[in-house]
Figure 1 (cartoon, rainbow, N blue to C red):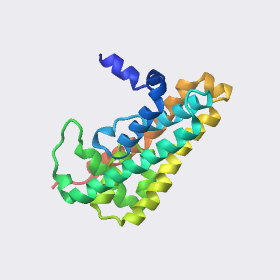
Figure 2 (figure 1 turned 90 degrees about the vertical axis):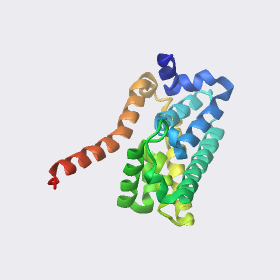
Figure 3 (figure 1 turned 135 degrees about the vertical axis):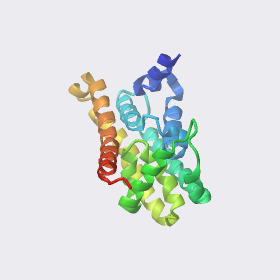
Figure 4 (figure 1 turned 120 degrees about the horizontal axis):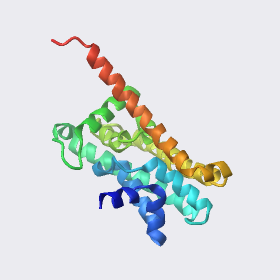
Length: 211
């Protein structure tokens, strides 16, 4: 059963297994990963690139893919912002659960404190952080018009940018022949920033004298 679920999480398998419901499934995942706690583990970057690649082969309509995923990303971030705005500091006292990991929220908070409003754009390309960044922005009482400005820009670059890369690069023979390697590189590139963040944090704590 676990092997079956892991197989479905592979972007190409997930999309092709849904048939005519592929676009709806992609949209749901982008929405969940953008603003719901349990969406932090979903493969957004590779899913968008793969969807664009499959769109270039006629499997998914390209323009609706761009529109649906863009709207889903914007709405997802709005849900996260609204939740953070309503709950505020109380959320930071919440204990870990199956669908909530406090350390992801704290990492997003640190990311926000470092980059300010730009976090809403930058976080789109960092796994885990992109799910919790709008929640932190809401909890920090970021002005809504400022949030929406960066939300629209980040959502555009992430959804339309990655899907278009897949669409226009998908027909290049090398990319098509080495599709799985390209996806692994995208996943690796997405994980590196967060890995470096935790490594830096670990080193700083190791160098801090214990009282």
